[in-house]
Length: 295
Ligand SMILES: [Zn+2]
Image 1 (spheres, rainbow, N blue to C red):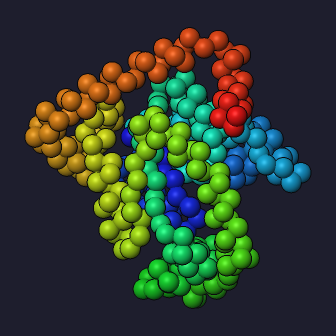
Image 2: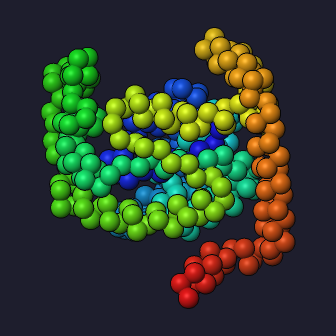
Image 3: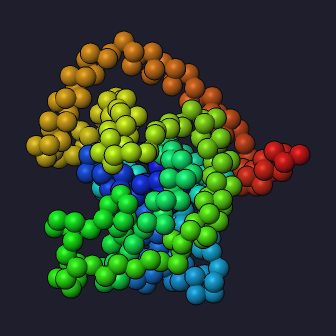
């Protein structure tokens, strides 16, 4: 299953991504982590990224896309991935679509996590980061407690600090920028029939349930069943999931057949349109399309 989670700062995207990793057995691909890892490993891509960051510039999209492409080649990403932190704007979404298309691994779904503005402000201003281990807590929704109250780095309680980024003034500005950049993205994915929205407010476990429900039809798609066959020895948990999916597949067969038919009638049309486009025009296309939209 190949998905993108979209959510404003404070939407709980990080927490839910980690839960999906466990539930679905696919990796979370965070572009931030990829960049840091590449810089630390001193690879060619890492060197270029570091140069950009040291110069106070944004890392170029093409560089990030190369990193994603490399990461997708690793065995654990064969069954799918949860993309985190990318795309953040329309140009990146278009570039990503081109990359995934060329790899024959198009996205299955884009899930938008919806949280009210006031709640977002409250959640982010309640955020505290441990100065020793870097873990992020929230005084409102997830304060340090139980086994998590002790810092793994020091063995004492976490030393919580309020990052300047999480102050209420900066939060308002961050949310404004996020909204401005992602609104076209949402339209982009909606027009492709990929967008799904969930209510991301309330209890964390309930949000996870809504999320898995929103993705439920994807776990039983024939194409994904084919992919799991490649795994040599499934874990007992995966075997159970597969058995459950098989059962479900049986029951839901008629509706799935209709869905598959609809999807089949949609997909080739898109492919041929892309194929007809000459290469150079395709590269220039994002800018052109943006101009057309403005006029
Ligand atoms: Zn700590």
